Length: 532
Image (tube, rainbow, N blue to C red):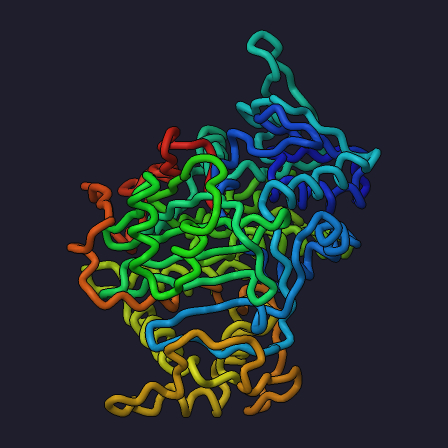
């Protein structure tokens, strides 16, 4: 592309990935970030979700390594642990513990702050990239015909309004993007928005706790209709433990120490309560709620301006419980790089259509999981997906092969065909027998406790690897922790008031404002960013 300058709106994860790709094709890349960030910035106003655990799926790690060579080693040098997921994770399903043993799926855990610091340093070290911290974009510039974007307008100071020209503008400003309003004002109409209300709530606190080499992650998730609580516990790069307690269907972990501990004790995994009782809390608890998924269908607009792209949360936000956001955004940056390398004609429109393909299945599977809490009838396709995922929950304990296949798909390494092989279909479609746990391990298994580790290539059914955009499944929201009593009446719980408007599966944006209920923090309950 014979172009001189690209402008990126937003300097978060998506903006940094976009800037990295654009720097190989433009003489100058300008990143405009509303927060006053530097290379050493930690928590900032635009990412209140950084206080909570983040998961970069295996495919996302691979894509980032391609965009930022050596990133994995750099994170490891900062203490980010590397391990095989099957050996290092303890994963609780309603029917028992998932098998433990090597599955050939390496993962690396790092906090959002550390990851963004590494990416930002890499981007700022590139002489072709400049950043304007504290710059607020308030509009787009247009050519004389009003069909092409030629830059942006905004200011870093109240009385210093300016225009910044560009051959290409990339909106990576997150879920609070103003792009739909700008497009409507320019005569392009307002794009269709689809939203699904995720009724989950999660509360997170950081602890200094004794370390162990036996695990890096413990997880159990809520699952409709009766398992309303769950949790995730991850080891951070400094050896601390980041503990998140989840709630669904009105449940929310209290933020006070006693209530937080009582809630943790209702879960099946003893590590949650042990971390609290045996560790030292570092800082206060943080809460996020109203974890909606929202997709703006830019790819369906009859007209789309030249010189403009949109990616990341500005296009689609996914309920962070499913751990897809950063990976899906990294994949979109990879798509942009591929199209630029090929010199694709009509780049903006082609890019938005390719992004839509990449989002199709993550959106479908994430919203299917969220729709399980909807008291109203759900579409037949969603009900089928919910049933199949629930049956996988029944099969995975005691079956290392299905466990490995599930997480190959969950980490976006393989397409859904890996879960539709004849060997898996037979196990899923076979009616469960009364009292049959399917080989489930009800007590926590240890890594390498005699369960067969399924090696790469030892697959049945002959399905092919599939790396096409959109051909993947989400990580979380399928399994859950086993809670025996009705948790609506259990001590230590806390209810959030139900929202009077809207509901799961709601479609038109007129009924569901696109930016309602972004975050819910203990102090700043609205926040200024979106969860990943």
